[in-house]
Image (cartoon, rainbow, N blue to C red; front, side, top):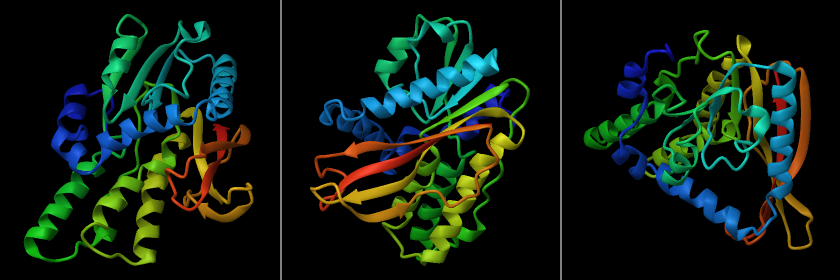
Length: 268
């Protein structure tokens, strides 16, 4: 995949609005902001930790061009900080909210890129489900091509921003509306997607920030269950920081539990 070929990216790697709508991507993106406002400040510590880690690493690495994967609502990226105004920044996501388009339109150093950062897997899964429904047969998800993601020298620094554990979620949710897959099939699928994403950092410097574990708690704050979110092997890191994110305190994400996320920020 050549990230410099803008025409190729627009043609192949940006799914249509119909696909995004049917698979829940637009609804999921809107839901993130709703949860942020509903939490009334409970996300501030998480956001501050993200900003601090990113700014410290950028100050140390001094890159001229940065690609941010999963920029979304820019809650966890310090777009307003003056220290990054001299960096050429490309914000990449499946769809940029109109508020964000408006926010950055006058920032000459910031570009927006609509792209499926799973290298086209969203459209392939959508087509696979469509074909399976027409034929009446359950698709073999182990045969899906999940290529490793690579970059040209156009971007010298990459930030994967709270996206690693989300790359597979809506894909799995969509497929499981129509068929039952074994635990082993789903685990293999998730691991392949995450490993492909992590391959970025084998040849490119950057930062990974991701939820690692979901903590389900009772109303007293006692952990009832821990849900592992990352199944791929993380590359060796230069720097690492971990914290708990008070993700949902209103039982809106899980009807039975409060939910915290164990987050790790890692530099490569």
